[in-house]
Image (cartoon, rainbow, N blue to C red):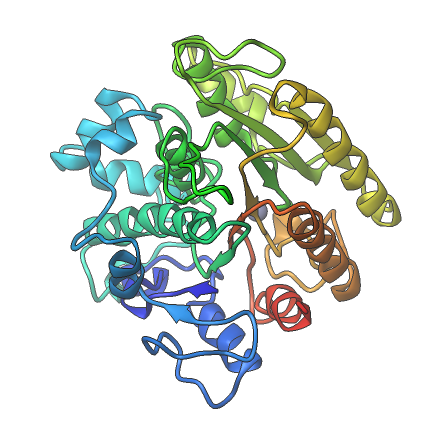
Length: 379
Ligand SMILES: [Zn+2]
């Protein structure tokens, strides 16, 4: 099934932000899947992968009447001080300017034309918050009927860190949703017995490393709120394992200067499995991803080698026609992108593992193509 709610489409241009994220990407994906369906129509059914849910329909399906993400959920992964600064508005605009890299070193606007904005910048927070809920809803929908599949046509803000936004990502929907889902018992096991979610794999396919998610998961382990790989489950804590396959170079854009400018900040932490692909190694991408999944199985031995849910950060910015300069070092063809997604999809489906997918990075006018062709190709 697909989750998409047009009322929460990210339209950066409305805020004067000139980053080439096409607000029509979800619509173009749905149009490609079925030209006869209006995007976001509640109850609409595509030939495959099934119904399109908006948030209201998704919440009803889960027996909820209102929003399912609140401030407490964010504070389980982000620092309380950072979260508070967003909610009380004291530095929300400042955090957004930093997150979207809208000011240069001299304090001049960069990719930012506030005079063209039709909405106040701080209104963006509500959409960002909704995307956190969307990713959580996608996880719950995937879990609802056993080995399900749900693709959320937004989400994937994997750079957001413990105490600040980063790389166009203010809040980390991936870590927030995964932590919230752990320990829940949202679906009956085949025997009819309730089965809590104990292990989630985050498989991050975006061109840029999932550094924020890696940090939030590590910090939660250090606080004793998550179990680590190979470690015994402690006090009922669930486990999230992170794999990121990404450009070997090019992210973060200014890693060293950033560290120098912010003494005391934690350095970037590794994912449980990081796979860097250099320019020219595109043919190695899929074999190395397959090998990485095998290593995740090894780290999951105490859980029987498999997770209860795979959360896929399905960035399409490795695509050769992506429009963002910083993703240029990796150039997968459309066929390579689709085979990448098909591999993960089939891996999960053949083992009866639910999978939830988020759209993540993808820039320019052709960013809709890889996820659309993948979704159309599912059989
Ligand atoms: Zn990216």
